[in-house]
Image 1 (tube, rainbow, N blue to C red):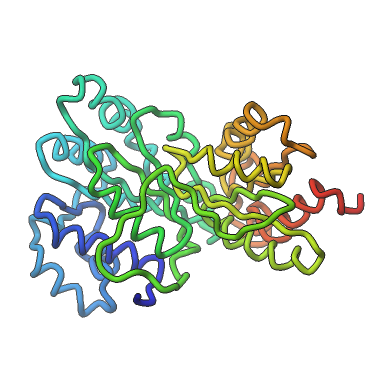
Image 2 (cartoon, rainbow, N blue to C red):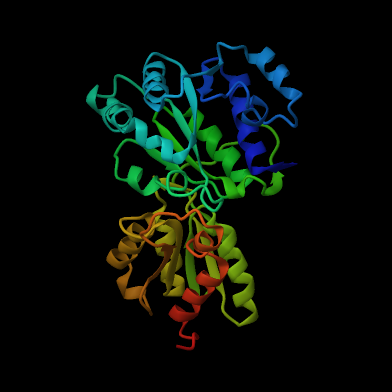
Length: 334
């Protein structure tokens, strides 16, 4: 085990994949200048070593055009390479929606399985940093509506590394949504290659009174809420889906069957979000188990303001999650 940061774990996964398979390439906006972070180096001095190791044919800058990045990646993947594309801000994904929807998501189906699409698209969600409306979106719910694309939302360094290694080896397109507020998180991460399967949720904390399904940066917030609620005699079970497509419905349904209560914490917007889908799943398949209405703790349907004071109030935090748990548990004073 080695202590790694969230960003360092992503870099380690990419570096190990490139060492193991010469078909793995990385390209995107200014990746050569940032290769020490992209490749998991400890300092800028490592940059030259990685460029020398893999060469400019495998680590390549692209024009500042998301259409070019995504289109080129799709073509490269269909002809035998395994691209990892760094698209920087997640809001930049919108610029390449035609390629994502009509090429990346549909090609395996349209060609009857004769063509594979082994490509990983990484993007950072920069919410919570006063980057305002054009740079603060959490767009993974939109892509959940596209059959053919797998979606990962790692909430810890270990999951970031293990899920990314799995994604790189897949023959399907994967979108990785990484919350930059988690970049500095550190923990012990397994050395060498290891893979975390998609569609398998992680029970971050076991509990008996309320199930809390938390996504991305809402996971550490839910854990903070759990510590506070434990002092009040309320035991919550925190589940991190880790991947949203595929989604581990059994883990959530089995937990709700034990606790009888559900809170879903999701930093994305409320309407048509992942929290809405998870809530609908439980309402349809575990309604008889519920002892209280389901509560969603999400970001409201609003553009993100530039003001740090205003923005801070929007995203799910430990206090909001704890308050929702108290309500479903029947201990909150109205």
